[in-house]
Length: 102
Length: 144
Image (cartoon, rainbow over all chains, first blue to last red; front, side, top):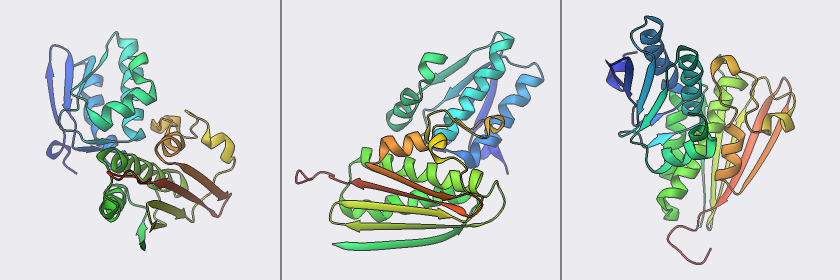
C-alpha cells in the first residue's frame, strides 16, 4: 500500500512532519507509524509533528500511535508536536489526556 | 418509525471505515447533529477495531453489525465469533490493553462508554464477543 497517497511526510530541522489522512484509524495507523519510525531510526529526525489540518476523524488507534511516537522520541530528547486539530479530533485528544503528556 | 440495517463483513481493517460510514449514512434520517454522528462513528470504529484486532487477532473471521432505529433511539450490536474476552470488567478499565506492544491505547471501551448512552458487553471466552450500544439521537429536535 502506498502511504504517500494519504499521508505526506517531510523532514526539516530534525523534525519529521506528517500530514495525516482525512480519517485516521487502525487500518492506516500502522503504515504511518512505519513511515515516521524509519526516519527516526535512520537518525534523520528526533521530533515528530502531526499535522491534523486535513483530518476529520480519529479513534483510539490514533491515540495509541501518537503515544507510541512520544515513547520513541522522548529518550532521544525529541518531542511530539500536534498541529491543526479541530472538532472531533481535538475532543478525542483532550479526552485521552494526551495534552497533559506531550 | 422503525428500521433495521444488518451487515455481515470480514474482519478486515478496511471494514472499520466502511462500518462507521454505513452507520453514519443509515442514521442520517434521524437528523443528527455533527457531534452525534461523530460520537456514533467513533464508538462503531472502536467496536469493529476490537473485533478485528482482539476478537480475531488479525486473522479473518466474520463480524455482524446490526443497527436499529426506533423513534429517536439508535441501537447498535456488533458481534464477532473470535477468542472472546477473559475478563470483561478488566477490559473496560481505561488504559487497560492486552496488546501494549501493538500500541493499542486501551481507550476503546472507554470511548464507547463516553460517546454512547449505554454499553453492554457479553463475551464468552473462546467463542466470541457481542457489544450492544444505544444512544438517543435528539438531533435538531427538542422533543428528546
